[in-house]
Length: 308
Image (cartoon, rainbow, N blue to C red; front, side, top):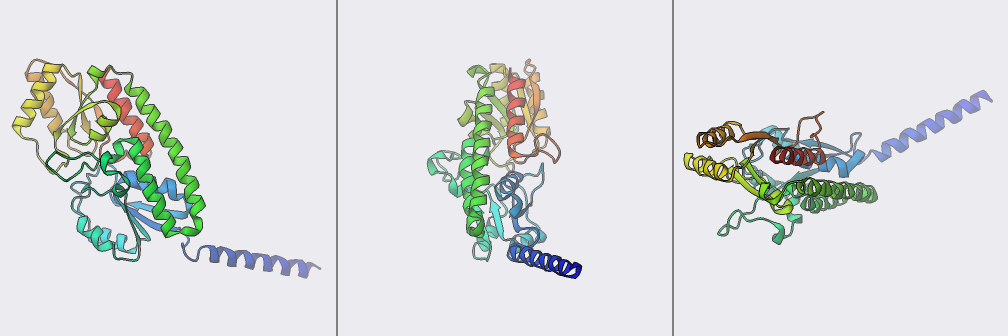
């Protein structure tokens, strides 16, 4: 009798092992391999992909995507990945050719900007066909971007469509709550105080969505340099309008904003550095800003508290 029970247990164990192996046949032990460019996209892919995927972001916290140049190792990772996710709109300015070559490969390649309607994109200027790539600063546009990532996962792994959809729908609810939080905090400021001066012009989508006038010392891309005239003109505007605070950014050197502060003070008005904003990346792991939702909350809290 004991031998029969033992034999039955062995059969059950073998069946369990075979079932587990069959379940992991396509995905591997760690799930589908997903490579993203920015930290924002890595966070989104982890939320929607859940336990079915293993996500790696090429750019860590504090890395400037405008200036990032992919290494040979990065290219290899993308070629071996099951899915690659990038922002587009020339955010990853030095990687465009790589993405074009990946399009003909075996993996799913997702450009989230393709999920944003043309009328919702902000043109760099009236004469340009180029658009501002910083779409994540409008939480409602980030919901549109999430749909593109969901579609990518479904194309990659149709058998688990319902799981991806469930994760996506839960994420949309969280983003709705986040958008309400930003609106409520912004409404704590009088309209006259909603002037946001930062290191580079990354916050136009934020300004458009939440009623802020936005000014960046540098242009859309940090590859452009702020000239002496730019600093002087912006300093005059800040002093004339008695703007209480200006802001540094986590992925941009402080020196330009500090030079702006000195220029304003030289005109007889004392402007404070109101804090550090997360612009082109999320916060460090373990911080309250390590996720997209945490980063957006940290930014609006810093802005409102400094400008009150």
